[in-house]
Image (tube, rainbow, N blue to C red; front, side):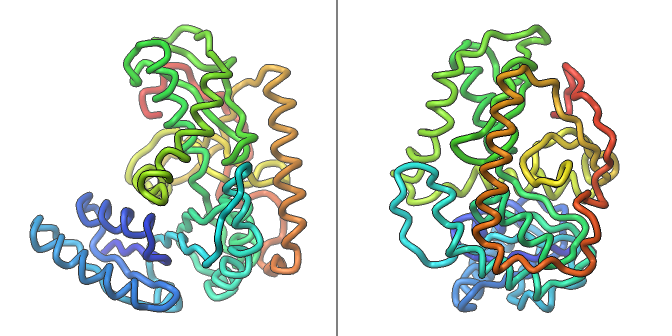
Length: 322
């Protein structure tokens, strides 16, 4: 029996629960939320959906402590705060969300399954959860959403099918994200990437969603589902996730084979490498600001993620599993 824990029953949590019920590859969903009221409501709504669609997936309300037997846990709570930032919008949740995520990390100390973090700023919250919990297999979804938006945008600008575009966005899930233009291909050939237009769209696309719906939900939920299926070994392929690399945590492409990830960073042009260094330094500085919440769990012995192979494999051009 495959069970998924879902901590947070807000916009993203609701979309994740919906996808899990309809996908049908898990058997149960355990839902927790801060007050418990939204979790109870989501469980009831998912029960209705499962009945209407004939899904065998069953949802129950639970506490995080009851999720120790789950195969994976999705961490997507959001503290209550007013985000009025005009720039670095995702970073605005740093101070508010850090104590919430750190507390969950300590509460789930030593958990043995896969953890997928969604809470923003996701690269920092992923590291915070990993270092406070001691969990070995912790990933964040930010760069996967960015890469999907990049491929969609480039396909539109170049008037080609999105399936023809292969390329990554890495580093920070935010305004200092690194577009790997030099390694991007279209129909297997090097592509000329209109970087200014692409960067503008990556910044404004989520803002347009937020303006109309209040918060992004479907895209991040899809990234969660992709992360779960790869990390649980249900599918193989390359996916961009937050993970540790050479002492820092940021979005990188990982090639999953039977649930085991290997770093497969694409080659970077000089300007891209400089931009990545800037993004990593920014994340490192931001993490230092919440150091009071980030007491490292004794199980975290090194800065190398034990579940990520340390060999670097260049992402293969034309890889259909991306």
